[in-house]
Length: 107
Image (cartoon, rainbow, N blue to C red; front, side, top):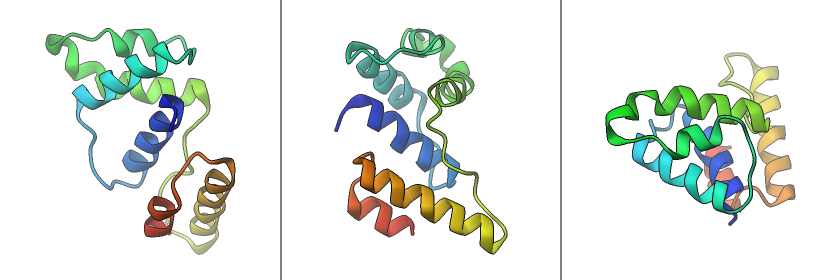
């Protein structure tokens, strides 16, 4: 899995409220994505956060997700919104951005 895909998986996890990803994971994933050549204005800022600045990690991660346009649809309350999320997950599977086991568990 490339590190750009790792960013997408973290975005999905947070969007679905599965868990809150730690600042250390966000920072490390951002650094790996930078090293892979992923480009976003906020990505170097996230990758370069120090422990003292970890409080900014989630806000910067959200900026990266928006800049890279990798955010899934938000958790849905209505049936049509839920189907939009299912379609998005299926497309991520087809694109190779998600492992089938992970997407299947979410669906």
